[in-house]
Amino acid sequence: MDAVFQRCIDPACAATAALDDTSFVCPRCGGLLDVAYDWNRLRPPESLRFFEGKWSQRTEPLSFSGVWRFRELLPFAAPEKVLTIGEGQTILQRADIVAGYVGLEAGKLYLQYEGMNPSGSFKDNGMTAAFTHARMVGARRAACASTGNTSASLAVFCSATGLMKAVIFIGSGKISYGKLAQALDHGALTVQIAGDFDDAMLRVQQVAKKLGIYLVNSINPFRLEGQKTIMYRILEALRWEVPDWIVVPGGNLGNVSAFGKAFIELLDLGLIRRAPRLAVINAAGSNTFYQLFEKQGLRWNNGKPAASVSEAYYANLDANQIRASTIASAIEINRPVNLTKALRALDRCQGLVREVTDQEILDAKAKVGAGGFGCEPASAASVAGTKKLRQEGVIAPGERVVCVLTGHQLKDPTATVAYHSTDQKTFDEVLGKRGVRRAAFANRAVQVPNDLDEIIKAIEVYS
Ligand code: F0G
Image (cartoon, rainbow, N blue to C red):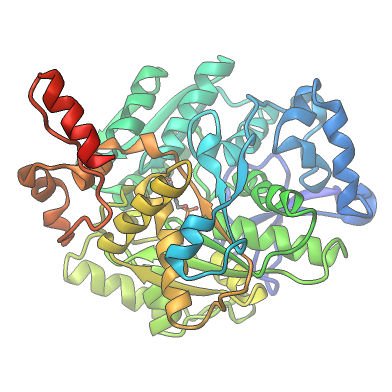
């Protein structure tokens, strides 16, 4: 057996696949795969403080990268194979104004700004890992279905390295302009499907298999290896202290799966003594995980979640033609491919799921913008969810909470401008149809005639 391989996540199956296998499904049961390590042969560090030494090596690209400076914890690639574009230079910011909004004590809320990545979202953490694996297996084309950020990330990795052609599948009219602009500008072959993300996800898997194109969606376990490092950077920024809660928006459930794996491995390696609790926040209009976990009691069940529960749920969606629908287009997903892995993460990290409305998301987003660096709507679900968990008393006011802000504010200017707009028609067209009724934290532009006295008067009145 090799020291690194792929393995079915169901412990009772545990079938393995070779490191260079690119089918990304268990060869025996068709389930999800992990990247698995024989740690006895790989010699991981004995303390997380080991990684502090990497800061003095910042002129080396692998130590500069916020992903690969932790490469001893994702040791699947030889250093010369790694493809990095400088991803993972992100910031953990103490956010007291937002803490006040959600009902936490000052100093207890931190925001992890993954929008600082080269393509503007957390996806670059995973893409550098998948891209590295794609290079290891000699891929020439890479594909994904996307609500916009995975495709933007893939497009940037292809344009910046010139090593592969990006083929992206998006639901027609389903991604925000910032993200579409990136795909087009970076030269990706952009296939707009008459359908939504769930349709595109099915198609891309069929096409990738048929044409032998390397798939970079988060069903690819190498993607998740890269996304583990978001957690390492949070721990690093907190001087290796484990927070009480990590709160993250849930769409295809790749992130929560990766975070769970990160903590399971750190516990197994004895590098931390306890894991934080994980909270996944769905948008109410695309709340499959919330429904299955919280309402129908679906659990990891040691690798065998009751398939009848999720099958009946999906059959009902189909029978009633229910489609995902939320202003947070990044998480407008009803059939999360990583469902079982996400259940494992919640099992091992005492996790839970909540849903928040588009109104709650946009209000939280405005607060993040007013009290920090800003984020796109989906990301603000984490803050809105934290507020809800505080109100429920699940999170205590003195607990230390990290919300992962997954994407940059400029990814979706339409939603932001509509929220702050003085024009009721713009508001109604973009937000009213989503059930958003008010913009309590709107910062309205002030209309003034082109006249010096009037301008000065307006500034004196409003500032
Ligand atoms: N936040 C943002 C900004 C996203 O783009 C996504 C997913 C999520 C949260 C949810 O993360 O899927 O790991 O649960 N976007 C994918 C895409 C689906 O295609 O860009 P998840």
